[in-house]
Length: 221
Image 1 (cartoon, rainbow, N blue to C red):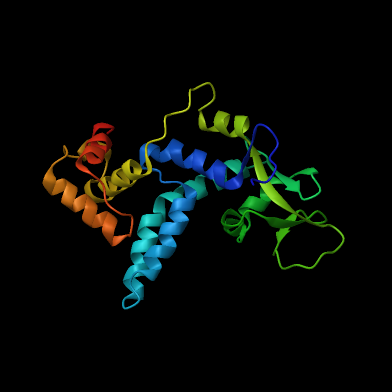
Image 2 (cartoon, one colour):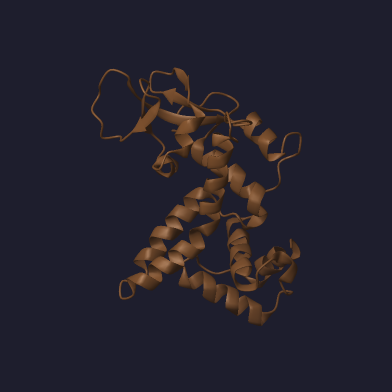
């Protein structure tokens, strides 16, 4: 059962998916897929850990770029964190606590994007490790963001939601992007291209796609 979420708000990973889709369109696979694929790729080549790590980092780059963009959106522009989208801590008690924008500039801020629950020190307005013992001012909860505010910041307000492509079509689009570059450079679907795409997918343990799926992917360029 999903944790309670106030109407009109997004979990941090959902906000990251919104940013990713705005940046990469149908090539965006989703935060959970990127995290899962990263782990699978790292574990896929025990005899060549360095190469596995290189491939994992390369495939993960869209998620890393989207994370950096969302981080900058939450931090805003200096001086004064202008135009920052405000993040909120939904505490385990149900209380909503505004998060100061400057925390997103901290060295360890990226760790926040890798977990659903965090602990927050209301005394110094900073995040603390989940292992921190209960103490006065230490509050556990989840980061949530206003969907309307984020969509407005991304220029998506008032636009109908794009129909999300099927997972394998998105995987094919990611392969095409890696193999052929920008969508404008993608060739038409062919048996040769299908073999290249499926080889790319199989190396990353993402399965395979049919010719029909490849045609749909190339037609959206």
